[in-house]
Length: 311
Length: 311
Image 1: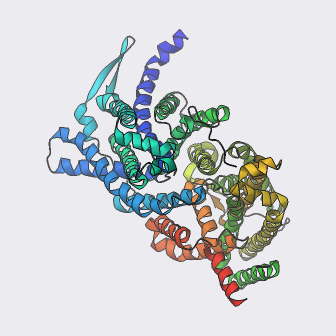
Image 2: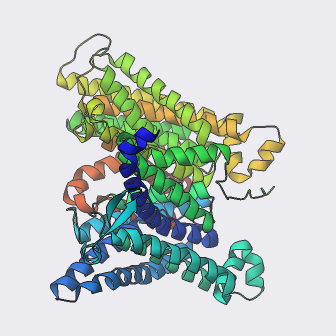
Image 3: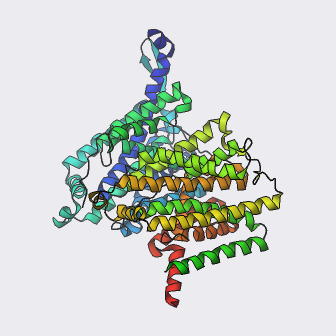
């Protein structure tokens, strides 16, 4: 064991750091998906596409800002701006003109509608940004690298992945928990989640809450994409991959759970990056092995609650 | 519509297929693919009856197609390859089914998607076995030990596909009318009532799932033998999406719907896909939305309406 550590310790350290950064990104997408499901009771299959579009927008805006000679530190706020733009435009449009028509439909039709949206957005993204890989990493370069002490060695790691990604994820987690429990709007959202009819009867405008939640969830997906854009090149198909992965996180955590999504994202993020370093062939399998493993033992996910069935 | 009219319309469609194929030689290939896809879509239709939609049935199509590709050099007869492909897909369907029938709606659809994406990644990454995205060439199969020339081979496949399509459609019709099939619709309306009657909803859904996997397997074997080349793309989410698209386009109301949908789909694709290659998914998505929002019954629904008006 000690010998193994001497040989592979550094690799493991790198895998953990990578895993943490990756988990942070996965969490951002999954929590948005989960929040939207919790309130609207619709699983947005196009959620991954919003992630991809957020990433592409961030890369384009970043390149534009750099070309205009804006200072280097501007690369960071540009990421946030991209998320606000994508969430602020796509969110209300999709909710108002598509989802609002299908709230009372059967679940299978709701799934089909968001799946159709997914097909549309995947091509829109290809039409706008083409199929060539797009990469703009100004934000990551500006922050430079940090030497992370690990035992007797140090691991050089980018400050962006070490501080910014987990930092934003943590702020989102704490902020969301605070927002949902302590503010009026947040509590109204929780009320609609728990019992839509009762909430509406109390005078809550459920439509407004739906619009707000969906826009917010779309923004979170776009922010995840924007934050991911400096770390890896964007390619077509990234939306589909993200969608499936964030669903795996949501399924592992249990639908509608916020804190649970963080834990599941950590499990899956770390599991995947350990696989990347030690068993590269199994990289794509690990998240789903974790998911299926959890679901076999707990069919509703780690923190999911069993719904009573109607008769 | 009574069964005599339906049989008459089915015969009309079969005759139209044969007539079109004999007058226009290049249509033989297109129509074989369309019929093959129609068989897989018929499986999707069975699941739709239970109110479930699978976004991952291309998994079984691809699994069977690769089985055929691997076995074709050794046992090159269509009469062996077809049943083996279908059988392998059925066994995989049973394994996957045992897991996914524990879930409904969102989880059912998304778990299928996740599993198919895993299989796709494996096909792509295990280059030593599957040759990655290059795919594998499939040698021409013999028919009952006879080697056919190109013209004969194409026609033999078309006739096989047509025979299988009719066989599967008749089977599906009897199945849906049987107590087992009636219970399938029961899952959609109110599952708890089924359970109170002592019927295991899981077992009912599992049987439909395995049948749908076998149908997807037949489809995959036919596609492998027709296109003579298999690639991981057969199992990508877009392929699964196409199956769902055709099911909705054709109309889930009757067993002819899938074939009507598949033929229209493939014919349109021959003309449109080349000119709109980048926007193909987008067009499919838009049409899917339009059908769901404005013409629920699909093409078959329109045929029914026409017949109803005359009668």
